[in-house]
Amino acid sequence: MNSNRSQLGQKVARRKRPTAAPDPTREKLLEAAGPIFANCGYQATTIREICAGAGANVAAINYHFGDKLGLYTEVLQQSVRAAQVLAVHNAPDQNISPEDMLRALIRARLRSINGKGLPDWHSRLLAHEFAQPTPALRQLIDKLTRPIYKRLLELIGRIIGLPPSDDNTRLCAISVVGQVLAYVLPGPLLTEIWPELRMTPDQVERIADHIADFSLSYLKDFRSRHGTITPVRKQRLSK
Image (tube, rainbow, N blue to C red):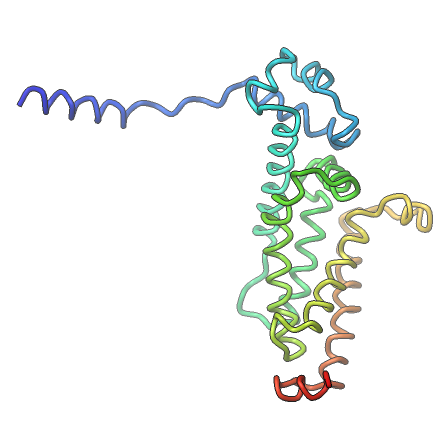
């Protein structure tokens, strides 16, 4: 009996044991690494540079993250999670038309990825990752890009009257994504051809409306010209 009570007491004690506080060195490394990776890119950033910024020993990265890639992956995932929080905050009401939903989704993505409410290094970090992909890119796609793409397919399919899996639906979704990325990841091309562009909050709203108007104009025209393409009709058209 006493043995059973002793075991039960140990279990209760384990349950009441407080959760360990976040390691301050780990948090300092993450805080220092974000802006450095954003400024220099993954390849050019050194472990010593990050540790100097965090006031940590060079062995701390291996201890907490395994290696530089482990640290970079965690920084990238934190940035993505922050953008997702903003996207959820800006998410539109579900009880609206697919056209209005698409417009709101475009606006939410531009707001979140362009750093409204986030430090500007978040968008620069993503720009580096897309320009020079690392092994962390697949996780980025799975956590951020794929869910958005799936939602776009559903919305655009409803607008043009085709299934989400139809090639025309996919082409339209990729076109919308491409327009958003053209401003999110401008690179030297957009800087050269439009050097006066400043992604202020007002400009982000203006660009979001333009992308939505441009996209919806084509989508509505597509549906009026093609109608709802049934599987039978689609098979005939492909012959």
